[in-house]
Length: 145
Length: 140
Image (cartoon, rainbow over the protein chains, first blue to last red):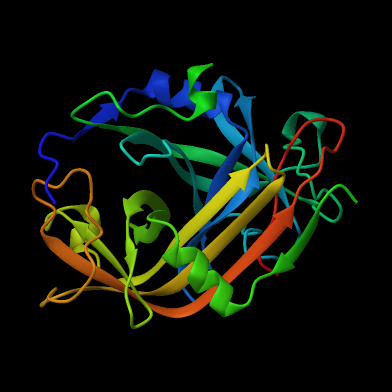
């Protein structure tokens, strides 16, 4: 099947930051013990680190996501139910441990034992939008805010 | 407890993968794990099939890879996530494989398969925690 004219557009940085600020669930990516890259859904919160944006998460100490000092990513996206279009934002960076602090609290629903507090310090923030040939697609509802 | 979680058996993970068509393909780019949304289809031999452009990052990639598919439905108080780990390799003969039909079809003529080595997943039942909704789960 060739839908022909659907194409990808690059999202500018301001749009990427706005989308990151609106959502609160994303997917944190790490390379696991077997060398396989994986992402897992997490609650996250955007924090201001001396004027630079960073992403804070909480997880369980010692689990697959608890990799301070290692490269990681956060991915968020919005895809409409008809799969006719959507967008995604990717934050690449390094994980570093931080002390428990209210401003770093991503408020995971399963908070018990989530005592590893991490911040993803971005090295690159990029985004793309898939533009469908007809305006049949929509953003994730949260993307309208 | 505001939420409960349980691990899904492999057959249910595969059923969920078969019932969806968009996931996030994870690979390693210059040492950093990255994730990109893709259209996919589940093949008959524990394979996930994607189509991409030959000169794209995914199209040039060979090696450890995973696909994550999830459905976080706050309204219906449920959420699940499935991860298929394996190796991404190019397909030399796509004959007989189901077509993932990417929306940007123009130059997406590089067929690739993620040959699944391990599949795992979790399902959550959500409840209002009193201070808003949030989700957090991970494999042990």
